[in-house]
Amino acid sequence: MSIQWFPGHMTRARRQIQEKLKLIDVAIELLDARLPMSSRNPMINDILGNKPRLIIMNKCDLADPDVTAKWMKYFRNEGHAVIAVDASTGSNVSQIPGEARKLLEEKFQKQIAKGMKPRPVRALIVGIPNVGKSTLINKLAGRTVAATGDRPGVTKGQQWIRVGSEMELLDTPGILWPKFEDQEVGYRLATTGAIREEILNVEDIAFYALKYVASHYWGRLSERFGITGDAIDVEDSDEVVRVMEDIGRKRGCLMGGGRVDLEKASGIILRELRSGKLGRLTFEEPYSFMVN
Ligand code: G4P
Image (cartoon, rainbow, N blue to C red; front, top):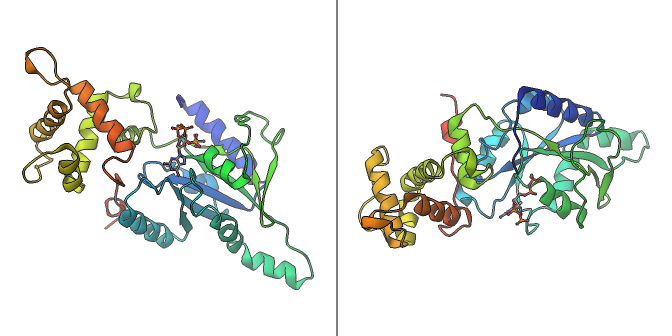
């Protein structure tokens, strides 16, 4: 997925989502559980306004469960309903219609009191590229929904997907942009593979990722790559590079003169992190985003 975002694109994306919001009762904000803040659109509160919102932390199969629990608390404190799911296997996905319906309980109770029969909850999935929107739509639909792409004239050609008896979902998600202007966010998204490596230098991404993993998950790193000794001081760049070289040597990434091929080592480090070879990892903690 390579999307180049320019201010014009953002304005259009925002307008398209706001058109869709007129059609729905609940917005489902999809986040990557490994990066709940970096995978969040910086203007999300402004874009969604006071539309009832359900936050879904997707890819929870890859994220550190203890940190996911902290993030769920963080989002609940923000006043949102939140569920952690794995859209690829469908774990917890069945909770979504019920949770979405709960957000409208008061309205439905009023309708029932007036003798009306509440209709299914209408929902829209929104999220940045690669967060798992299509995967989740397909899971909720119970089939593969053709990707129609996001076009202007949004209300045309859209269809409702029936999800059980409680929910109807728009077949095209709302595509949002991440916080591009923040370099840290860029590195975190590149660490998980959400943005393409070509945009940033692979060695820089691996360095960034290794620094985080060495400071938060040293035991797993040393075990996976057979690194002996105590945890390094991650603020010392030379020590981080030494670990990178050590991993490269152990994985046979050598060039002439016994030098380590850091580019190759970086590719290995990132592949193993992304595919869960070091276990379930989360690359940001809620405390870094709390205002003191
Ligand atoms: P998007 O529509 O938001 O752009 O995302 P999409 O559904 O295309 O998902 C992006 C990638 O994330 C896909 O992998 C998808 O399989 C994976 N994915 C989605 N949800 C989950 C999840 O809960 N857990 C895990 N582990 N992976 C998830 P891909 O490699 O790009 O494609 P594919 O090889 O799976 O087809």
